[in-house]
Amino acid sequence: MRRLLTIGLVSALAAAFAVSAAGTTRDTTTCWAKDGGKLFQIVCPAPIKLAMTAATQAARPAGTRATANALGATGTAGAFRITINSVSLDAAATIQAASSRNAAPPAGMTDVMINVTITYTGFETGAAQAVSAALRAVGQSRNVGYSSVRNSCGPVLPNDVGPSGDLSTNQSATGNLCYQVSTVDIPTLMLYWDAGATKAPWWSLR
Image (tube, rainbow, N blue to C red; front, top):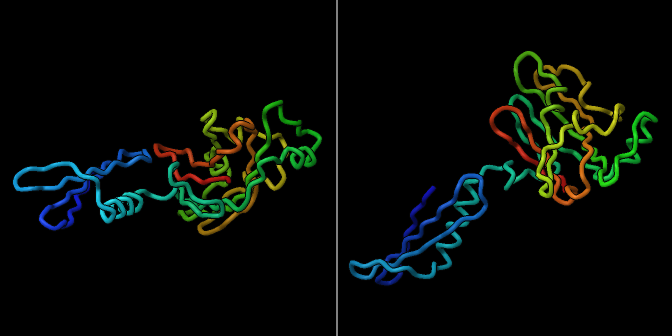
């Protein structure tokens, strides 16, 4: 994407070009001044730098991996509104206390329990289990998606949001998700919606 911004500088005309590739977080701005019929590159004046930075940030949608929703924010995924209420980044003791059937995580792994509120906004009904299955956790170290099914914390999850059943229009359910994740991913752990062609929205879990 290219934007052109001009600003008068005495007898010269400065043009700023900002180029940003989709899905990236780096933008470049190049400024040129016109002197007679010739263009030459200059250091961008501060007003141009500020204007282009603001324009680029405004163009980025909230809820991408680069612009993840904050903890506590609500994101929309299909016919569901999802709010991440709280996160326990080391919930192993809580999970084991819930049932003797829940084993301790293997070495190098831990249980992450996330409390969410989901609201169905579509027609007829929407399954809470579908939301539980579509939400993934991921960290930058391993960069693999953790599933609450494939990477379950155990057979018994306290206040599991998945079995909340079918929700009617504007009905909500609040409960927990749990992921057994590598401890190296904890410092950068995020949650995202993985259903359909687009992996979004995203939430920061820190």
